[in-house]
Image (cartoon, rainbow, N blue to C red; front, side, top):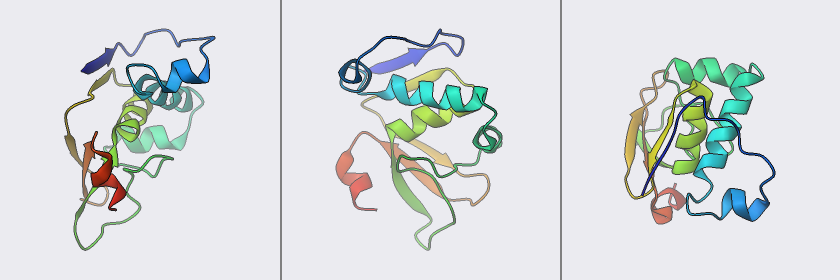
Length: 121
């Protein structure tokens, strides 16, 4: 299932925790909204994301330094928050993997809906 929201979509208000995190989108929209909010507050993470860096965030998927393996797995929540930080539209397919390379470290991160993959890291 593809989740797409325009970057100028008004922020949702008045939702319960379950509505934000347990709905059909699995909390991806909420993670994106968190990224948008951080961007609006002037977080330095936004500039990092705009440069193609994958900064450390609360979700698995950020890169502090390159590992020997050179790749790892991350969550779709990370990808959504990163898109919000960049000021991008939300565009995530809940059934697909997305591969990004950190511009700072050269590390490859594969954002996946498969929890077993990112739990290994």
